[in-house]
Image (tube, rainbow, N blue to C red; front, side, top):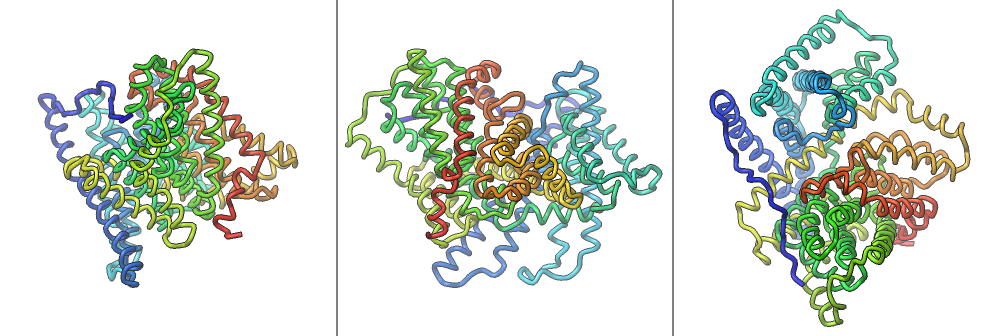
Length: 633
């Protein structure tokens, strides 16, 4: 059975400009979008070319490009900060509207105004912090032979552009045109009064408590998570002088440009190219031949294809979107309810962030200084446990509701033919994991090989897209990678204050005072993470909770690799639960199914995954059983 994309009707995205001032602003912003987006895409392409050239040089000619790592890190800084104004306009910054959305209209406007003030103030602080560090830093980067200040040169400019976008956003959207300029004016007054003149001071306050309260307030107002973290770090500095603005910028840059983290834009790009090139549909065809004859066949295929996709992508959001476009329409046409179809798609989309190469585990490795290879290998068996739990749950639901099979049982020849078609795609997973296991490539190099491999297959072997579609795909990947990079960068000064104020140690003392029984502590920590996972994106959750909870677990003698898997599996469930539930929202929005109905249909699937979480938590061998593949023992 050959799958083709059957997306639900989507609105026409061709821009329609208004008249008068609004039309002028919209045309100007579209022009800026093309320039800034083009620059971010060019930077991403350059990053790919440099790292790939270094891999070819090192393995093909035994000669490395000495400046490759430094150049790639500088380019990634450009990608991250160029996307700030673009994401301002598209509202791609992750935020939580749980409280704001439930306020009366007039209070909601007040909250949105305060949030804009926080965004403007934080952007101003970053801009002046960037200018300060440019003036302070000296010397020449040895690898690149360029002045070191160039590394930070783009930050003030993109922050200024971000303020421009914020100032005219109301005109662009046709509502409250005064809000942006007023927010910037208030932010400038606060900066002048508090930071420059020192007329208002909170010096002497507890920096840790100040940061936590500022972060909670900003999040409650619906401020994007990255800006909430940066704002709270600036507030902590006002209280205790821990991190001046220039140091915050320095921490951001260092936190988001570790060479390991360059794997993130590569795997995001590889996943986007696979989707555009039709590679993922071949995996779904193979899944049909494997499990399409099971009870609840379409739902079973949905789960298995997500597991196969996980081995080549690592992005749950792209899997949720792709599965909704490809499988949900077919499931509905074959008698499955739309909410159940969306729920299965969202639930199975948790797998790509558990099964390697997982982007979530990359973020965890950076946040905890754990081995990426060990974390990736540790994710294999837990991913299989989650697949088994979901398939069993679907089988029970299918019998209760009378859902049938997807097709006849495939014979050996048909399965073999489907496997042959999928082998070029499945081979990529073997290259990635095998290359890292035997020390042939680093995760970053594996990521760039995945990009080139996906590009060659999609554009030249399968011929699914041309240069125009390629550019569009890379542009989307650049912005998505930038959002992840900005979140990681914002978490660096936030984590610095946490550690400096010894907040993890305080939490350790509190938890161990409740009980020193490892089983009880694990249960309490799981409940805590499930709660926070309801409100936080997995990337933000990892970056906020890992520095707090990992020391507690290590103190109790729990293996950090095992607990790292527990963190990721736990927080992934937050993508399925209200009120945030991003995976659920993605499937409901694309399929135009009421999200509350999807949440209701999710209940048994979520229960199955919680059962899998408990197994993974209390049976460490599930996470650690394949450790010999890395250790060689």
